Image (cartoon, rainbow, N blue to C red; front, side):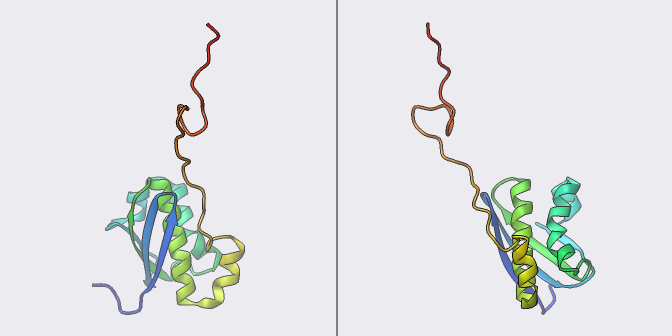
Length: 131
């Protein structure tokens, strides 16, 4: 059962979408019903997810419950960070300048470029041989 006071934020990064709920608690992070360190695997990604709490000095004050789909682990971690930032903003709007300055509220627009015809990948051409 989830507590009554919850704040919601949707985060996106590459092809990953994260629905994030934060509620007052001890700092537990749950992603797709698994603890963050088990789900993310790498310490760097766990730190990425915790960044919004570190910069707003709210580390350990909120529990995070996230549902992710699409993309890979790295994209999902970025999406969760974006979602947490938006949820923190809903919880206390006075954190906006801090989060805005570090770019946590901006959706990262970088996505994979489509493959073009006449090419091997998006930009790489086929190997040329004179003979």
